[in-house]
Image (cartoon, rainbow, N blue to C red; front, side, top):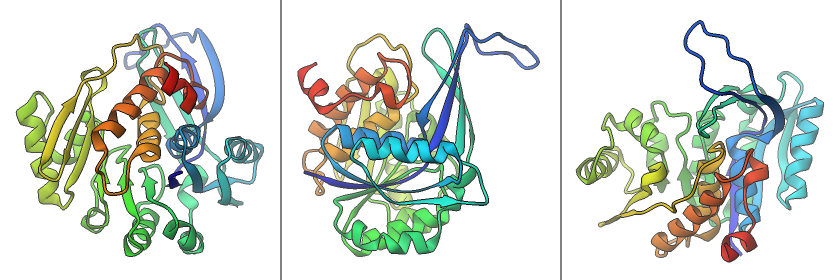
Length: 302
């Protein structure tokens, strides 16, 4: 069984289902409203746990009912929550999701306690990190704390996976301790300045990331599939053809599934990507975030 540590966000996701996204100044009426456990980090942890990994979480919530609820939701999945702090100065994070009838979404995030992870908390998790095959992080928590955790992991020979979402400039120091970066095509373009249009642009993007210090790259391309460049090998893996109902946790399912399946030497990368795509294809056919993430049995039997 893989051992995966997730450093990341815990949010209450409030989804408003609408006919179409509002134009500037336009008011639209929601068809429905629902609130569930979410956050990119928490979603990825749930995916990793449901898909076969022993999963540990490093995060922070507020001293409120939402924080209790989110921590309990992870614990119910068998995820180790010992390194989730409860902060008295910030509320639990929230995400407000607009979901249109085609299944596309727009998301506004309030970081709250997710930004309150401490250096002492990261250091306290050092032994846990050392026992893991992978450490996964996103950009919904402090980049300073991600750098600290990745540095500790790197010193211990633990492979680090960076999901640069939401995308913004990445410090060179963080790139130096990142073993695998997994952006979607929009995030990749924002980071490199290269728009993904064809095979040539994918290869140029891989070269750009290598110049930035990252040798191993996966770009998720939605319905077009997944491109990866690992060492001197690159390939575009086609997507599973399904009808998307809600894409909210698709990327997070992919990341968690990948970490649960991937070998630490990346030798089974193609197989791990196909497994993660299969899991993600099930997620997008369901409504919600964590509620939509499949189990290992569902992926293997589907």
